[in-house]
Image: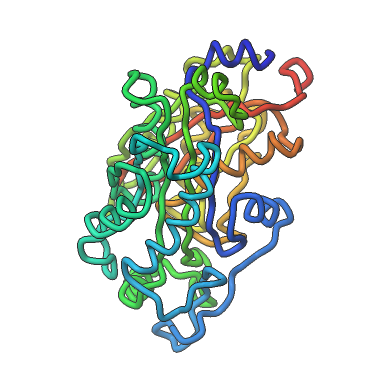
Length: 358
């Protein structure tokens, strides 16, 4: 399927990506580091767990550990947003504020008070954006992309910015994770390394993007959100119904078995709950994949980046097509929030690999 046919099939596309991660200060550097399997996990300079051992985290390379609260979240978000907006040209040339949807962490100990309001105020004073905050945790970034996709599909805007930003590196947050036995340590092998970062995607009406000569980095084929009722940290047994449901919804438009998913990017982070959920879900949906276990889980490289996960994964998928190492044209991105939200997106990335060759 050539680009012209894809333009007609998928009316919304991605034309810009931005990232700020413990692996890189922009999207290309972050994607290259993940492809090279470079790890940023290390000991925090002074935080220790309840056993007295240094906490393993991933940290932004330029931010001081002493920067916290809204200041830290803002410092992570702003450069990624600027990078993603770059295809539109100089900021002063953007006459109408760009509708912007930003995923944020769920309510938790250490989360800055009034984060939504304070961050929106700062960003709207610095950038030509009109923000809507989505504080839904790991799935929030993809939920932001879904809102942007719907806004463009409905004709309300030709361009939208969508992304997520998060940081676990607050003293109260790390203490809470330790109490909940979620920290990766010598005593807890089923925990995760807390991280931080931001990822943003500039979504566009495909026709509008072509009209002004923008390069399409990926087409958005489908996006959906569902709810898992059997949550982590409860006595309920999760058998993957929510995750299986959202994967089924985004793959229902595919012409299976010819149009299978060739690569998956997800937020599996080592927690037993997440691993078991994924295993149960695959029993229901594995026919939609060329290889159901062919997943990229960047937590091993940049740590758990919470609400930033989905848009950062989308950036990795776009980079695979742009750099020519995509395993096939269809990439799935999915993420799971502790509060129950399950979100998935299928991206069609530019690649010379045809379906019949997979």
